[in-house]
Length: 606
Image 1 (cartoon, one colour):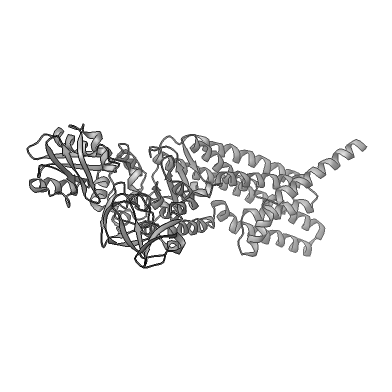
Image 2: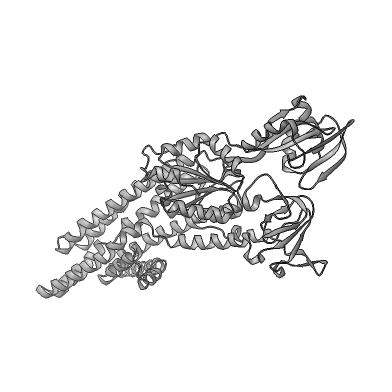
């Protein structure tokens, strides 16, 4: 008997430890939420556990605490994310910069730059804040901020943004904002605010629990009070406590996290990282998908797409251009040298910042550059056609005569039209948000099958567009750059191209596609919808079991042991159903979600 007594004592101690350890993970937060007027599954689990303890059922209380704490731990594991990437964006800004003060160029700390001061931006330097070019001509790599893959020309009077890299001649820039208020700084603050807003969003299980918790509490109190008035208070108070345990949402509490865990695991096997159940639930509700262009719909590798000639062969035009560009690090140079073989070595090569290149190839004087720098002459019609198609045009001139025009463009990924078509079959509207010129954006969108195009957008503009789209339907944003971060964070679901995308984009997003293709996107949407259906099935099953147990327990037809046994069976059923979410997301869901106003979305335009 002593041995049995010792075993019982050890079991009781173990149960108490389990109750305390498990309860610490959700009881304090549930009570804090209650003080703030919020109720959820955690509060009902707290009340049920307390009822089990009052009835002396330490094992049941320990089981409640253990199951719920484990489910919460699974959810926390899925939602964990590093914060390094977001703050890394500010490291793009150098610690010091050159400014002109009293006619003298001095190096000062970036934080000391004042609005209205003249910043001297030399070749290769990164701009520390937004400004207006007052003197000089150059090309700027603005891909970190606008996402535009091809550098843009700038001259006096042009506005430039923080994070741009000077790829040519020296520029004098009047600062129009302090570094702390620059475009890059606003990106960081915007992402943080949007993520904080998202973290307060209510999950599916909590929405179910919100009316359930007070209802169960009122019912248990009514049973105890009315029963005590008409009968034995001890009997009815005990029945009220049994009702609380019967109403313990064990199956409900684990139904969503276990389903989420299974679905996230399945998505991970296809190279997709989903940062928690909230992202998965939101993706299931998405009716609009907005795409960034550069690096998302396109490869972010400009290529030669067309060559127009004026009495000279295509190979000659490309050969002369490749000869001058052979030693250039300009992004267009790589496209031109890949398309043509140099006709010979070039000499006396000079780069004219923001304009083009001149040099000698054999016995010929050769010049190439933008139409602003090299007139197209008889090629003007072809040049206009190329520019209307969204291409960047380079004119090649030999001995002062234009002999050809080369069109360079960042081309669409070959799989994109099929992906867009699959999304449309799912009832999802698509739109493009890009910092590129409108002609380029329209050409790419037309080839992709996207009819809603919003071009020449800065990060704030993309965020505004997402906010507008969200007023009509749930929106997913797909992007890969720093400039996409505010839009990714603001959307109901942010989806980042994880392998090639910036750390900031991956941090701001809720889902990261670790490959460099969007092939799995339609299947991922279908997977999310199927997962949500399984969640709803589990919640309905859990609710029906509670609805059946509570009245039977209230009239004394079920003892505590039977109630606990039914709960255990329900948990097994819920877990078995949740495991169906482990199937790989291989194809889109068969049933599209009907848009409430597809025509309104299709014609929405910034």
